[in-house]
Amino acid sequence: MKSLFPSFVQLTGKVMDMRLERQNVVMSNLANIRTPGYRPLRLEFEKELQAALGRDARGKMSRTQGDHLPAVFNANGFGPEFERAFQPHHEHGQDEVDLDKEVGIMSKNSMMYNALATVVKKEASELSKVIQEGQK
Image (cartoon, rainbow, N blue to C red; front, side, top):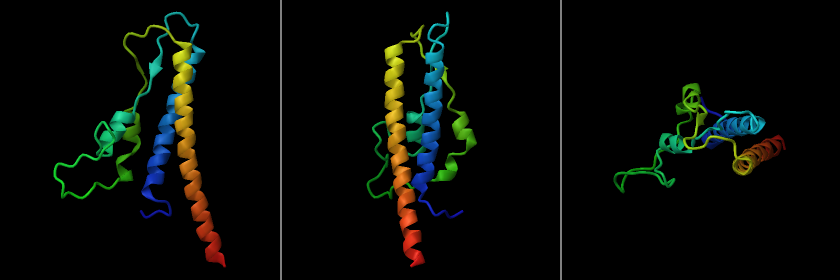
């Protein structure tokens, strides 16, 4: 179905959902910092997301021949089953919650989330401008 928003807005929304889920995992780790035997959880999704977008590990489009057209993002490929694949997991070699590491992860994740929110806000602002100009 055609949408008023470009396809990257849907992708941005999905990534924001995953970042919010990561924030919840980090908050859970911090809440259990004094729980004996608790091992911190991690939620990693960037590598799988890049693969789903047809990009290599460096974020570059992977084309087998120079005359191929670049792939176009298909938002329909990011259904609920794609998000279910991202489950928090234990990180090997880490037996207890490291406060500094958790705060670092939380800060970076928060900055990335805010950057994505800025992109969506800008797109909504542009659409609002178009609607207001159309009323004149």
